[in-house]
Image 1 (cartoon, helix red, strand yellow):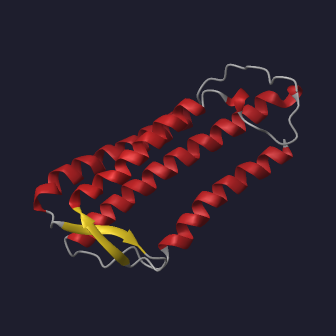
Image 2 (image 1 turned 90 degrees about the vertical axis):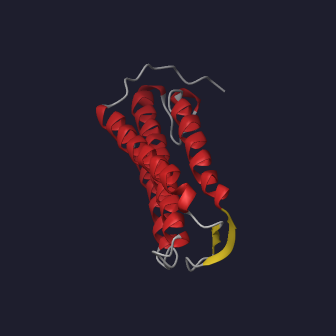
Image 3 (image 1 turned 135 degrees about the vertical axis):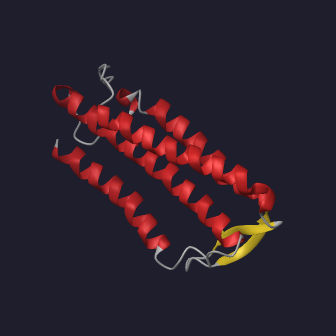
Length: 163
């Protein structure tokens, strides 16, 4: 199998903007979590069922799990998007390598920022449920979450096939 060519692609301004928005929201969430931590009850939502109802309560230290996972995924995906020549592509040709790489980088960028925003929302909602300002995530959360993530993947896969 032939190696895919390495092409240096500058990061689009919109991708930089999306990164900045996601990181600002994430930073605000961390500040909010730390500022509210002392006043939170000892038991906070630890898990939700498919209907968005709390089905397990856990220690308030568990509130840091999603931000840690989200940050790790954001960093890993940021590193990954710098190496589009290592991605697998459908209908790849060297003549269209740059278009494939741009599409692949965009997909990783959009997904990583969606994940960070999603994890920020979940952590915020966990705090709201813990203090009694909300009942749960709501029945629509899971379908919306799945539609966003898989819709993004499908959108960029269709673009890849059309390149």
